[in-house]
Length: 467
Image (cartoon, rainbow, N blue to C red; front, side, top):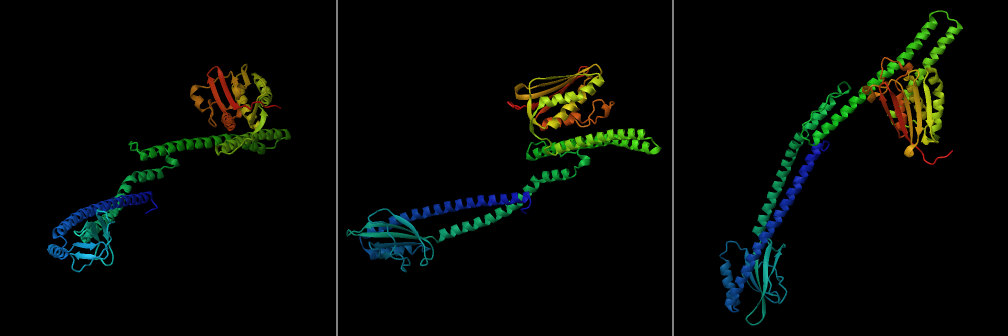
C-alpha cells in the first residue's frame, strides 16, 4: 500500500482524519465531564445548605436530625446521597447511611474557613467514585462541626463510559471511511497521471510529435502535462538535429571515401607508371587529410556536446595569434585576387587555448576568402574596448539571404547548396561558435545580400598582462 503515492496519501489522510476525530472526541469528553461535575457540585452545594437548615431547626438534637434525615433519604430510589455530621476531629456524629460505608476521617476544609470544599474520592473501599461537599458550621454550644453531603458518581461514570464507547466506535468508522474515501479520491485524483503515463509510454523516437492531452484547467497536472510536452518538443528537435547531423556526416564522409576508392580502382585497373601512382597517392593523401579534418571536427563537437573540456587555458597574445593566421592565409587571398587587410591595435591578452583560437580565426578567414569574388576585400580588425577582445572579419562577398541567417551556425548547413565550398564540410561556423562559447565568448554574424558579411567574436580580455 505504501509503495504507491496514492497509498501514502490515503494513509496520510486516514491519520489526519483519526487525529482530528480523536481531538474532537477528547474535547467533547472533557467538556461533558466538566459540565456533569459542575451540575453535581451545584447539587451538593444545595444539599449542604438544606442539611444546615435541618441542623439549625433541630437546635443540637443530633439523634432527631439523624432520624429525620434517614427518613427523608430513605424515600430515594437510589442510595446515591449521604449526609454526615463530623466533629472538629473528624469523628462521625451522625450519618444518613446506616452502614456508614464512607471512610473516616474525611478530609475537611481548612478551619475556620467557611468556604465549601468539594472533591472526588475513589478507592477499593468505595463501589464507585463519590463527590463530597464539606463545610464548617458553628454549633449552638459554640463549638465547630463539619457538615458533608456525598453523592455517588456511578451514573456520571456510566455516562462518560458510554460516551467513550461511542467515540471508539466513531473512530473505527472514521478510519474505515477515511481509507475507503481516500482510496477512491486517490484513484480519481491520479487517474490523469495514469493516463499521462500511458500516453508517455507510447511516445518514442518514431512518434515524438505526439503530445499529452491537457485539461486546460491550469491545475498542477495540467502544468505537468505542459512541462512534459515542452520536454518532448525539445527531444523532437534534438533527435531531428541528431538525425540530420548523422545524415550530413555520412554524406560528407562518403565523398572522400568514394574518391579514395575511385583512385584505388583506377590505380589497380591497369599498369601505371611511377609518376601516375605518385599522383594517385598524392590525391589520396588529400582525401585522407579531408577525412581527418572532418573526424577531428566531429570529435570536437561531440566532446563539446558531452560537456567535456576540450581547451587548455593559458595566458596568450590574441593579437599575435590573429596576425599569424592572417599571414598564413595571405597567399590564398592573393591567389584568388582578394585583398586581405588586418588592423590591430595594442597587445591584446586573453586566457585561452592558442591552437583552438587560431583554428577559429582560420575558419572565419577561410569562409570570407572563399566567398569573396576576385577584386573583393576581406578586412580583419582586432580591438579591446571595455575590457573585452573583439575580432571582426568583414568581407565584400555576395552576402547571405535573410532566410538562411538563423541557420548559418548549424552543422553541415550550406546557404547555397549548389556550391561545394571547395571541399568544405559545412562545419566551420559551428566549430567557431563552439570554440568561442568554450572561452565564455560570443560570436555573431550580420550579412546583407550584395554587400557582404561581417562576423564578430567577443572574448574576455585580461587587463594589465605583460610579456
